[in-house]
Length: 97
Image (tube, rainbow, N blue to C red; front, top):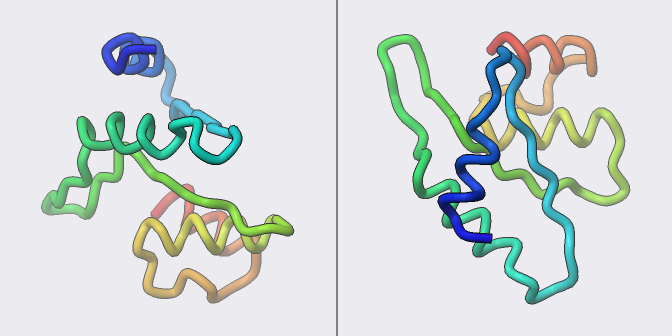
């Protein structure tokens, strides 16, 4: 799939919900290449009110639990207290910043 088709397909949402993509495949099939190509077009941006992260790449640890997934997402977003709090409080930070 060309990168322009990939971008067009993901960028077609008209809702406030974020677009999500799950890439899974055998080693050497191009998952990282696809991600890097796509993410390069949408870099993180610093604004007066915070950092905008249009593309977030996360490798989920195994075995995955709600706690490990939320903690990993907060880590990748740069939350200084990524591993602090209950699952509920971490989820609130994840959603509302």
